[in-house]
Length: 308
Ligand code: DGY
Image 1 (tube, rainbow, N blue to C red):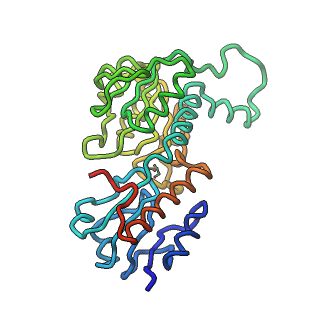
Image 2 (image 1 turned 90 degrees about the horizontal axis):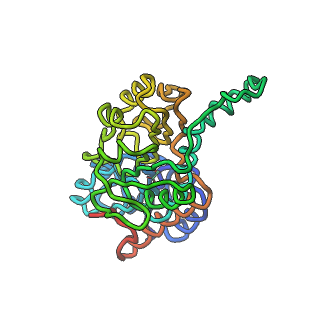
């Protein structure tokens, strides 16, 4: 008998879903129903005891089309013998591209400049208008030096940036010097966050860390909203404690019409969590999630299980 796999969301790019449907009965999108063997979910789908129990004892694998897995209760999955997988390796370069877009937009005030042009306010050429801060030659501090952090570092080389990183698991390499967090915050012109959201990184960047940064510094995050204390960030921007911010991620996602005060602030560039949003990369993420489901359902090890 063909096994049933639930897909939690509509609109999954690429051919992965068609491939899945040739091996299993695909149900959904929709809420979890009992009797499924696999679930293909997104990074912000909560994978907890309630979801696992709703699927019941037939469930063998939950494959996230996402690198982040902060919404997974790993203990609950392990207790029920459910393998949970994610999609490392396929989205680092695309997310690094977007990180650099945020760096450039925030430091060169590109959003404000574009809006002013579109609003018909470009009436004269003035030497003092639209002034930003240089990216080339600046010091970039990477908090987290895994796949995405290193991909950002490679791009920064082309901009002649000096590179620092803080990551307990990553020593210095040919590109970047390993430093402690206080040194990174004090010396960087751009601080870019590339850590997963864990109990240890929740609110890692708060009022004290922002105060330790240069008044000309830019904070960029493509990791998870919960890593930054957003109230403290807003205050730091208003008080001139730091220069600007570029954010692709927020504590509350999606926002709908209840916008965070960070959205629309002229010192902040905000995007709706699109770090990995290219056609090729999103298709590769779905493909890898499908591979993981098919492997586990065939009794083989998952390609990319969550790290133990
Ligand atoms: C990821 O893969 O973790 C992205 O942030 C999308 O969830």
